[in-house]
Image 1: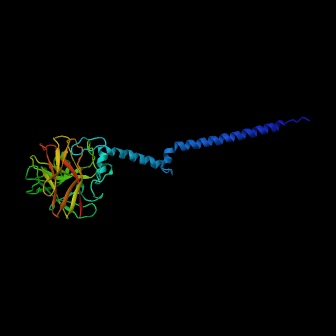
Image 2 (image 1 turned 90 degrees about the vertical axis):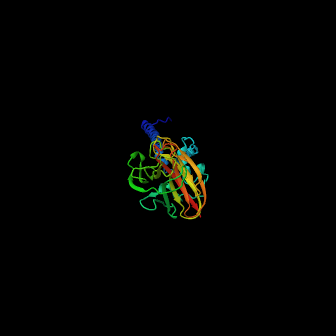
Image 3 (image 1 turned 180 degrees about the horizontal axis):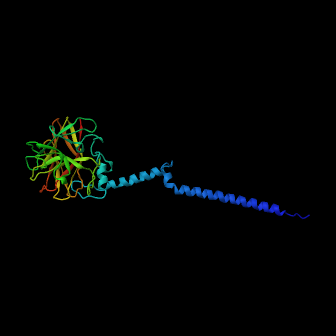
Length: 314
């Protein structure tokens, strides 16, 4: 007996098979679309990714940034390199490049130059200790001896406003007269904000202590008066000229015996020049640490910002 397939049944089978294949194709297309969406949204999905992909990228960027910290900083007149700014930031909390501790001082402690407040009356300036220790007083004067820090009288006149020559970029300053020289005051420029101001140490944006030397070989001096007995050291040593002209300047650091502990040759290109930490030794209350700026021949174009942090161990 011969079997004859019903044409309608064949057609129904073909339609069913075709429909099934179309459904698979649609599912596949849907899967492809989902994959495309995931791929297109990859960058957006990385931040909350539980596998840490977004975090790894951020860590990688930070590692790349930190890798530049091995570049040489300008130290005591050495040449600037591209990695100098990162290197200086690494040393700003009292640590040497690559994290090696420069001193036993804890980060966030000590008396820092950018926290100095110049003011009318006596004392001429004060600086608070970052961790809540005693406030220190400072004396501001021109030395009476060449390249030394002997004192006769303090700078006599305080001006709250800006210097009459705007190229100095200084305010709240002590000087022999209004618009006079030498002076000690506060910069009107945030640290790291000026064109050519490379190698700036953290914290950026602070207003630095600024000195302008005199026309002779005397120094313009900031004398830090120890508010308590203890063992003192200095970190964050650096200086720069505000103007990019002249012959440069020199920052000199003296201990209580008025002997030179460190010198930093400041260039005339607005770059910060850093110095190694200094161990001052044991001081009695009332002893002094001196910071003096020498004009290195000509005092023209010599507004000089200086940086330091003084630490004390009881």
